Image 1 (cartoon, helix red, strand yellow):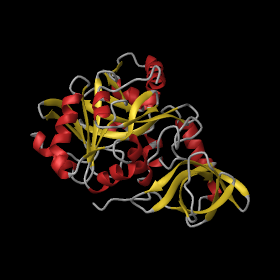
Image 2: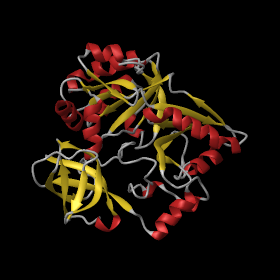
Image 3: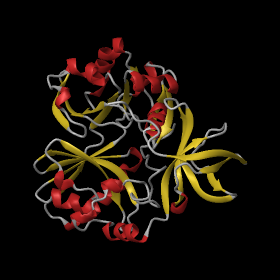
Length: 366
């Protein structure tokens, strides 16, 4: 695989028998044992993901908050220190450059966590917008930062013996800065699976030790190393958007049902006028959940029909192991967004019956 990047854990993945695939310019493990086994481990016990390909930017200075308020639709001003939020980078037309997390790490210091395939694009965009703010500095920390995701109902009990922080006191979308097995980490109660769990940011130099320590600590509890294949089926069941599928530069956050992240009353931000206009005039398309009613696996790119007329396109699809059905997400004309309505998926020239259902497909019992 020419010119592809590798995370610091590449050798460990090979040693664990991972099947490696290209993803966003990286050689990443798609599975170790099987996607189904790894998926079920995360739903019932725990899985450990290497997501060190993600990008991290540090934003700091007297203008950091004002800049971020201008940069993204969500309200960064509401963040306490060690709190995070989910948001997007939008173009002036309101469409999505990327989706990301923003952490407030100190009074005037923030960390942006962006998608691996968009690091260079995002960095250029963020730096360009920052020219209007003299007292803000932006540094790309991606190469020196690694990220592991420990996800599943027993994630807390696996992690707790390795740190002095009382993990139960870290709320959802909050973090703590503390050693894990002696390794300096940001311990964040976030994830991309629909389960409870933690994401651990550490130095790239330390991540091999952290990976080994977590796998050893979780072995008796059924922890499995988990690849991008299960990560995708888990996030799909949880109704979570993936950039390049549900989100792109032809789609705005309102169409993707992310209106809860768009704070139009906070003041002007990039895309605010376009998003306000879209909200007032009505949306052209809307994200829907689709459940197959006949045999067939829906996939991203498949066309959706109603009464012989094309009404939209799937953006993701797969068997949903935890829901026992073949499921997908996609966009249809806004007028067609009626839960319970039947439609047809064009699967290689055959029209296969499906139904519009509410998202998410899967919700854990808290």
